[in-house]
Amino acid sequence: MSGSGFAIRDNALMKETPTSTTPAAWHVLGGGAMGCLWACSLATAGHPARLLLRQPPACATDSDITLSPRPTDGLHKQSLQIPVRIEGAGDATPITRLLACTKAPDLLPALADLAPRVVDGAAVVLLQNGMGFHAEAAALLPRARIFCALTTEGAYLQSRLSVRHAGSGETLLGAFPGGADGGAAQLAAELGCGFLPVRPVENILPSLWAKLAINCAINPLTALHGCTNGELLERPGLRSEFDALCTEISGLLAGLGHPLLASAVAADAVRVARATAANRSSMLQDLEAGRRTEIRYITGFLCQNAKAAGLPCPRNDALFRAVRQREHGGQP
View 1 (cartoon, rainbow, N blue to C red):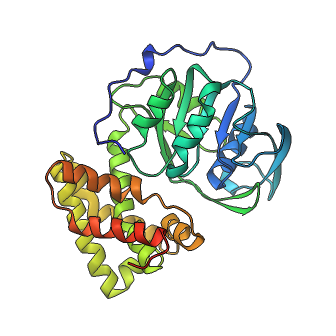
View 2 (cartoon, helix red, strand yellow):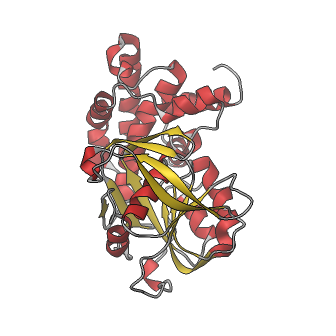
View 3 (cartoon, rainbow, N blue to C red):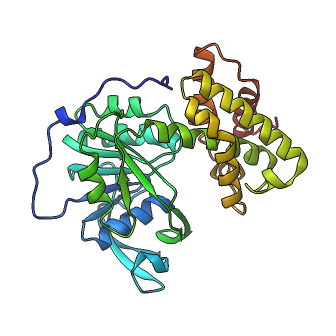
């Protein structure tokens, strides 16, 4: 896991993929809800969509994703069959556009497998929760142009390759490590040409920290207590624990040089918990399914940076250790 500082990197210096009147093919990594949803959005806009699966067929094959859209998507049907190409890491097709939708713990091994196929100047968009993996991804793909994205779109799988668009949101996209456009505006227009809009930002780093703080406040508590997001606000014992955690996170952000984010943590976390009151966090679902969680890249990242700066983080550290213990089958 890397520290909070991003290595100097300039996407503008990378070799650009030649432009063409033919829409660029997008490889979407991950067959979960987000991967299927984005593959459908790109395909409906005319971009060849290729879905990269962990357990693909023996050879590349054409298939359909069943999409249940929202009325706001403008597709005017209750269910559609969206054609996509299913590939595995071992296929030989060059990758010029890659949207990585895997969970954070699965990202780096998957990118390592795909690295030989990623061409010079390829655009690689990382759409994961948490922080701490961006520099490692850039090191694995040194000649690619790396972008970071975060989204509030909602989706869930109804069955394999069948996805429901459950909630319309916003997707932000910025160049790695931030501070310059680096081609984000052009790429956002391309990625957002379907029914999922994308907004470019010049510096995405503050947005990543803001989302990290909210995830640190909500996800570990819901995972360990087996509760919905809204119960953090409704159950008296949980509410006091939630408030104390927000206070610690705010102090850590201030100490790490993010005073504006620090002042908004408590209000933002309450707002998100209330807006998603019925939701069960992905961290809770991962624990219940026996999967690795993203705790290393959420609370773990915050704790690592806090300790490096000499800032005490007892509540976050205890939550990090408890979730890791539960991942390995123990009880905190």
